[in-house]
View (tube, rainbow over the protein chains, first blue to last red):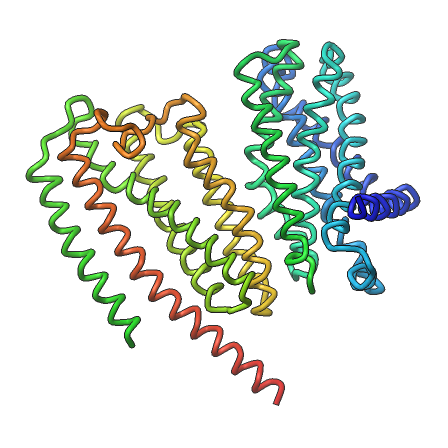
Length: 226
Length: 229
């Protein structure tokens, strides 16, 4: 309970800073929009092609734009030794990491909602048929991306090649989660329901979230000790 | 000195076993009824994949040992094992690709087993790249141990993917997973003997690589000491 309240305090602080500076959201939002526009030149956005590409396109946008948010998550604490101050405070490492992941997931979900609306308008896709199932898939996948993003953001924060190393180690690990999210999103956007095969992807998504949240919490001290 | 002798001894034993296996594969065992001669590549493809996966789990064990003890020797061992396992994973992918070209007519397909195996290679290649990006030995050991633990989750997915998903990649054939009846016992015997040969090569490579890693760390600490003085 104490860990959770500390994590919420960290998330509130991060979100307040982000609302004031809009440092990550502006960059991630502009990047997501640019990719959505560029993809229309990469392939003919006909109904058949969209059926094959929509889920993949959306989740690539979220994953790439998300990396911009995660890169800043811990890096913004470096000036004025704010990270050292946070580590020296009574906060536990696990609550610091969890708080960063909470902030990440809120920012990522906001980005996803805006991107999904734009995607619906630009590519003429109706995504409102199963809003609650789609919201559940987006939340589960975003939490997985956010917790790994926070853990790897912390892992790379003190590295010389931070901006280069984060994508190199983050994306391969996200592949199973992204495949699951893409399969489920495609099913919900075009089949308007989830069948037996897609349920397996749902279970993989849930298992991925549980395993990586547990690992991130267990390794928080190891990752954050300087 | 003992470690060097052990490495050489293991390499000689592996070489002798490999010669015996090659004789059995090409001179004794017949062609497979459906695949013809190409099936022999599986005597390298399967053992290389298994040795690679075992290696990642052993590296995970040493990473945990480093995190609990702080002894950099465990980290050197873990890094060496990941490096050698990565080589065997590449052998696994390349031999599988040659087999696929002959049997399926394509070099590559985005099958779940193939994709997860490729992702596994990318994760541990990232592990090695991250190690090179960190100069401070304790920070390097701590962070790469954490990354190794995260990465091993994908190894489980590679291992179980042929059971979870039905795709192009053949399902389990070894009798320890199927209970028998899917592979000729004479062929399976040679497959396991080749697994032993590849495992011995792997262990001798790890011994050589760990020695290099330990020496590199000692030279680095001497350089730091000289700079401090």
